[in-house]
Length: 194
Image (cartoon, rainbow, N blue to C red; front, side, top):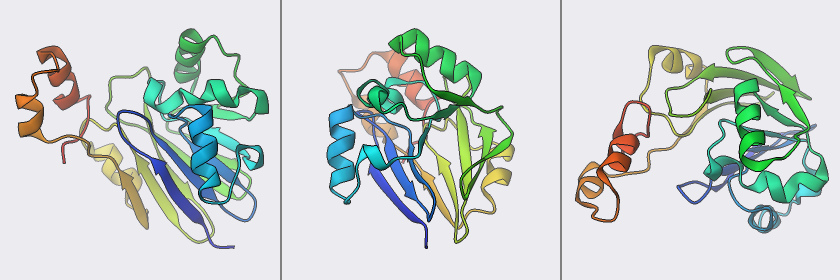
């Protein structure tokens, strides 16, 4: 079976993607409410009950808020130790966690996942190179800047998910956001501009 990959949503209100192979159905991040995730999966003919696991890049709420709504499914949550600890501190959830060490590879069924550090203002944020039988997918959200490590790790990718979510001029002129938030967004551990 060919690999199926769908972005369910991306932005400051939530981030979530879906990957399906012959053996595995994964969410990558769960940044919408459980109800929203259910609706977005239903739009592509899938349901949370059919999921194999959830991969988490980091602990910010726009990447994890749906874990609370999906808790009853007791899905394995793949993340590193610092991310797991931060999620548990924020949500009080006791995750069915499958810990990986940042920089190491692991397998979920017929999917091989390579994790690597990315510059972002979280505890231990990661990007992924996801290897399936038919395609390699680089997954980079909330990336402050492209390091040599990041560039080298995604070279084998056939497709690259890269979030660039602000315009420099619009951010500078935004009167609703305080200067400190503007600096955080545009900093080397914030986000890429489009």
